[in-house]
Length: 317
Image 1 (cartoon, helix red, strand yellow):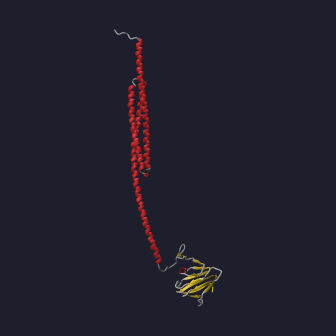
Image 2: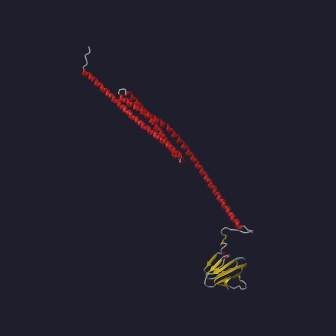
Image 3: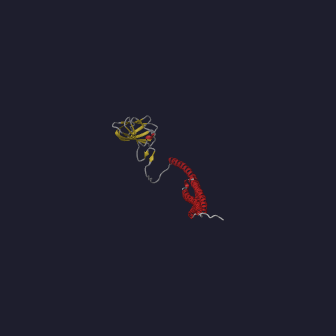
């Protein structure tokens, strides 16, 4: 016959069982909390992966827009896309861990209804994280593809730039050749113009000035001499303004038709002297002596043949 169990013993047994269940519920609750926290972490990581993937897409688009800058930017977008891809994979791994922990908490939650609710929440959060990670996984390959496209476009841009540089160099070379040819043609034209002879019939209208080696044909060049001066061939067609010492006319310098004007730019008389071998007539006479030009007087010497001259002017005696 089994001895009856006392009430005290029964209460002690039920209290022990209650405490055991409380301990198991606490363990399940802690496990559920851990799963919940882990699921939240997974959700955060999944969100981060999603953001990183979006960042990868933005970076890839930026690389596409600026592909002409260089291959370096495209490679940077490529690296970031790979980073997003790796983070998405890590998010999936963490989400799977969260699901495992949630299932574990779910199994233990049968002991305590509260733990069951927490486990369900953790499972939902883990599923959300898993979904976000999957979205990130879909976006990351697209970013990867765009980065590859940007890299290809950058290579094409580099090829186009090199082709443009080659064409520019060719154009520059052609321009230099054309410049050389134009210079030669200009030189030949100048030579031909200098050697050209002939008669112009009709009127010649010139816009601007007409010049020769001495200057404008509308003006008579003037040179000033401050001491005795002997004329030279370059004085033909000019005015020699003397202030002192007088002017000498040399032999074997001038040809028929050459003319030189003498201006006495002083307050005293200046002498115009024909040197040896020169015959210089005072216009309208047979006199061939030295001529005196009064102050501010002007005289013109005309070569009529080799070493033969006629001189005339105002203030000339």
